[in-house]
Image (cartoon, rainbow, N blue to C red; front, side, top):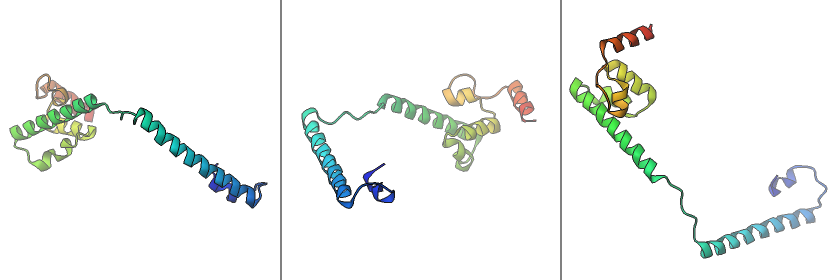
Amino acid sequence: MGFVELNKIDHPYSEQQIERIRRGVESARALADIMAKEAEKLIGKPPRRTNSEAIGRRREFNQAMRQRIRDIAASRGLSEDDIRPAMKLKHEAIGAFCLTYKVRAEWLLEGRGPIWMTREEMVVHDLADK
């Protein structure tokens, strides 16, 4: 419970005691700020935690996948409006794109294997929808 809440509940403290508590808390905060500044001078700021390698790999993956979507659009004569949902790279939109345009998800996600679904894969998807 913070010191601000002291006035909101029943307590055995007098107004003078409450004021002393508030001053004590303010002094403690001021001292903590001073100590933090002095420690920063001695040891410097802590390093910012980033995982730039993972962020870079993620960016490359997204760019490659968007390029594959553009390639399919170019080969099928699709408009920007047709591919806009898939370009957001949301799971449901990617799945719908694959089923609508008969593109293998493995190729779209990873760039491996054949681009187009085989007849057997199309039949399986059609049966799964029923």
